[in-house]
Length: 61
Image 1 (spheres, rainbow, N blue to C red):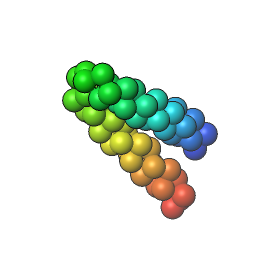
Image 2: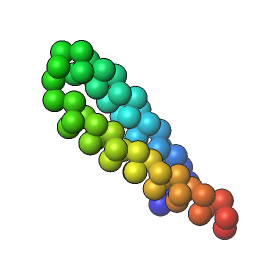
Image 3: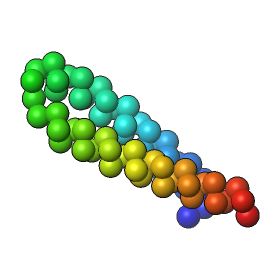
């Protein structure tokens, strides 16, 4: 992937992460199933870390 694609993907992932954090607060408030949302947040954290790693690799070239 090129830098611009990675940066766009990172922005999208961060946006999704913030949205899910907000959703999680609502789910907890209404005593919903927060485990599913937490799992999705963990998945996004891993994906964000991977995209950041890929960007770091591009910087090293």
